[in-house]
Length: 169
Image (cartoon, rainbow, N blue to C red; front, side):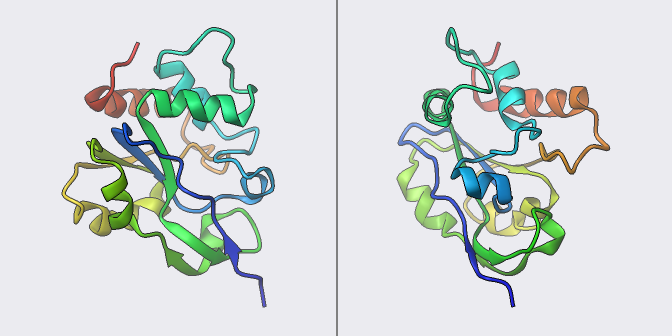
């Protein structure tokens, strides 16, 4: 029997306008205690290619610096699952998933304008997120496991949706 894994705390601010919801952190992210911690995940690269970036900030900057930058852009991060059993980093291996309290999070983010699901597993919960009364969007997963979608297509989809809610370059 697998051990129950616990996800990461929400990375949000009172000024978060967009909430990106993943499914559950992979092994690399859990080990680093950092969202999108796998070096081949496109999340940080995509967001840095879309949103204004401060001088010197790169996808290899410290997680603390990247997190502060992301929050300053009005973007928060969390996952649909608070805990689960999983023996790999694949969403298809998630078992006994326990959901996060999305309604409680909404109270902490009074300026939230939209929920963005990062991939299909997260989007399976769109009925829960739609019940929050905000627009909900499904975006292509930034995971390295989603190699069938080219980076340019992922970037275009993320740029289009983020442009609806944030000032982008």
